[in-house]
Length: 350
Image 1 (cartoon, rainbow, N blue to C red):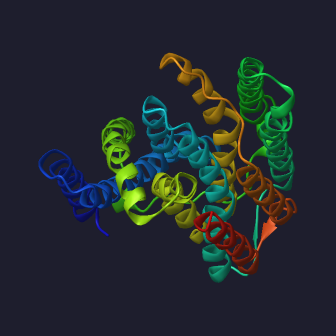
Image 2 (image 1 turned 90 degrees about the horizontal axis):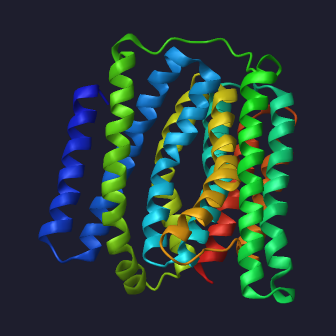
Image 3 (image 1 turned 180 degrees about the horizontal axis):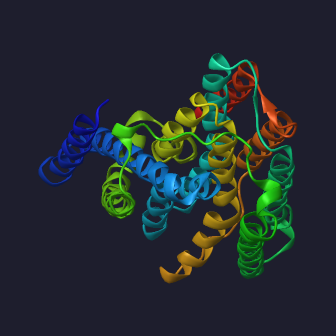
């Protein structure tokens, strides 16, 4: 898709979702048009961050792509917290983690593996990512285990302590990976230029990041207003809507960017986006939402259901198993997608 058509589609779908929100009463139409607009705006975020990466470097570019790609999910979650929909927030956190580890990484590995027989990336980074995945599973598992032994106010205090520690751990990981051990964790893939016709200037790329993020915030609020009624009409549970519908819409930026990079034989950058994004959700976004909830007068705890913990644990296990050796092939991507579909079917019938 050429750039003029792409920008025209972004503007048209955003305008259409605004019309549906303000001038119609159909929650179904509002949900569909707003979801489409968020997906296109997320794609705009992906293109902007890729262009920024051209100037900042692949490692920082991958981090920026994961960060701005998670902006949609974070903003949607904040509006859900404002409405008191804590269960849907936790489900969306679960969906974001498993969506990145299984769907985004799986599609990237398949796409790259069909074009290149085997793709390699830094195994040291893969090992650290596996350890951080385990940390996130432990941190989410502990509050659920102690649920019956602690009073509600102590659960809230424990959630705040764990949230604070996870944020500190994530900040220290950024220092470790991007400053003190930057060379050891750098990907050795050959840097390729963005196609001349697709390259944006540095200033324009940054402006597009800001503009896309602002409109994602606006359309995300529209989505939250329509999603409850749609879920009720279709008989979907809050956990399914949060874990799969919202997560897939919010992960659109990671989908497009990670697959595109894998097709260019930059599987290291794809892994950085997919795994890095899930780690950012687990170690930074989820804990941050605990503190954000205090602003609205009622604290969200970190107690996830057994189903959510099982999904996160299984996803972390297979993603770690596949990525730890530092090389991938298309069949490993198939395994990730199979697990994702299994979990999707299980959550649908809850």
